[in-house]
Length: 156
Image 1 (tube, rainbow, N blue to C red):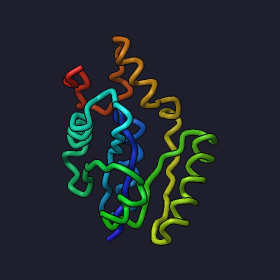
Image 2 (cartoon, rainbow, N blue to C red; image 1 turned 30 degrees about the vertical axis):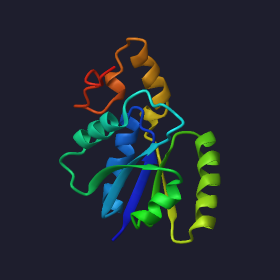
Image 3 (cartoon, rainbow, N blue to C red; image 1 turned 90 degrees about the vertical axis):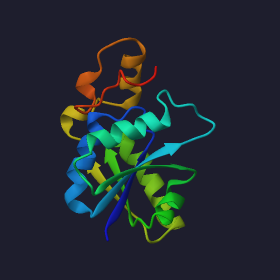
């Protein structure tokens, strides 16, 4: 089985994230969207709410699972027996950062391959940080969020 992990904080999950996952579906038998949890870093949106939103975006696709993990992504991949890491690239700076991580992950676990998908051009400027700032300051971020993801049901 070709199982991929798409890791991130997804605080919040954006249209760019959604696009990467939807475009990767034909490549893998299963994709686990794994929300990284760092006990030393407080997310803006609660972990369970982020997972719920992501599940709602992909509720019609049983091959997409949502989970969370703590610690090294590579250890989580071993735990769930995933042979692939899925990553999106927006810019050349993303590539340099992601390349280094992919090479270290490969050195730590030879059985893992990182698959990069380029972000659609219209999603290049969309980041969770920017979307979170729009929301935090009362702006309308709906055009940057997947359809059906009700950010106002966040408990914030």
